[in-house]
Amino acid sequence: MNCPKGEEMESQNQLSPPQQLPKGTSFLRTCFNGLNALSGVGILSIPYAFSQGGWLSLIILLLVAILCWYTGLLLRRCMDAHSLIKSYPDIGELAFGYKGRALVSIFMYLELYLVAVEFLILEGDNLEKLFPNMGFKIASLKIGGRQGFVLITALIILPTTWLRSLGVLAYVSAGGVLASVILAACVLWVGAVEGVGFHERGMLLNWGGMPTAISLITFCYCGHAIFPTLCNSMKDRSQFSKVLLFCFVTSTINYGSMAILGYLMYGEHLNSQVTLNLPLRKLGTKIAIYTTLINPLTKYAVIITPIATAIEERSTFRNSRPLSILIRSVIVISTVIVALTIPFFGYVMAFTGSFLSVTVSILLPCLCYLRINKAAQSFGLELMIIVGILVVGSLVGVVGTYTSLKQIVSHL
Image 1 (tube, rainbow, N blue to C red):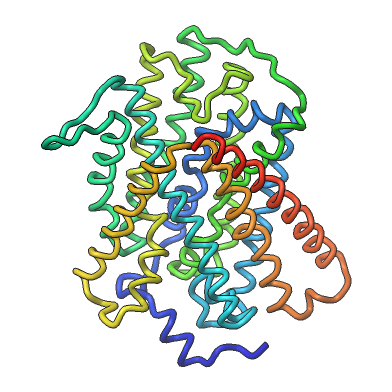
Image 2 (image 1 turned 90 degrees about the horizontal axis):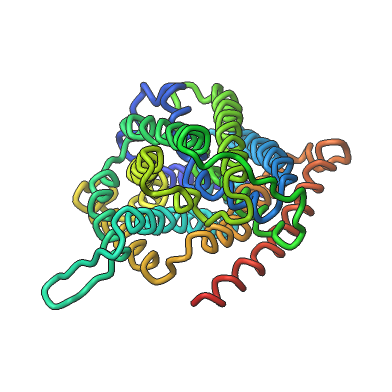
């Protein structure tokens, strides 16, 4: 496959001025952005994943983490193949031409978009738990409590989406990483100090719930769409492999801790978000919920930045600040509409994990790497590993997608 022409690649992949600064983003700031992308809303549903699949889900968690870390490295190697590659769609184009760019873009941006939708659903659910039976009235229009909270959240998030520099967003990301740690600590506090205890034994394995469990776990590691953008924003791109290792190890420790705590506390009675199980009158519960409410405020902007950037770069006025604000505002509004229409947190997350995250984080990195790196096509250990990943990923994607869609349709 011929490489795209230099002029075309440079035109399509021109970054916004803040990302072109020679200084770039430091190693530490990139770690914060990467951790913020990986340690997302999945931390709330990881205990629910264990309740669906049983204790052996812990092994699945470790395997998925290793697998997604490896495919992240494959993306990094793909970026080394051409100096003008700056985004995930660029990798798809280098591998499979313009059809590859289109395919990668569709799956990547849809995945990021649904993650943003999940943030809003999360806010509505948890605020309604804090303030039940609360409604809003605008003129003669009555709005339910959860719907009203989704709208209020969108208004608060909106200004953070107008930031275009990943270096600046790193300060916001640091707050998101801290919030994830505090959340796990609060769940531990509620269980150990405030009387809930860790008395549930759970199941070793539940085959019936395993598709949902794997889908939710895969969702937790769906940061690949952002990895090339983060790598390209770095001052020293050669350090990105270390960033990946640090982010995956740290996030896996946090996910595993939360899953074990939540499953020991509530067993098979876990809701799709562990905060919805916590007793409302406890101090630890209130801190956990308030911390949960902070997370989307710190992560939403990082998640939609690649979507907004892709749209802005195709515009004639790509450097127009007002146009950038308009595009990002429209994205926020559209996610609000979807969140109000399909308010099923766990099922939407399972669908995103099985269909989109499996494709973006597992299948496409392997396919692009094999196409770009001819040496990897020779029979050997590396090829056997990649083919094995493709087979397992395809199976998980098909079964998980069917299961999650069936659940969503049954609740509409």
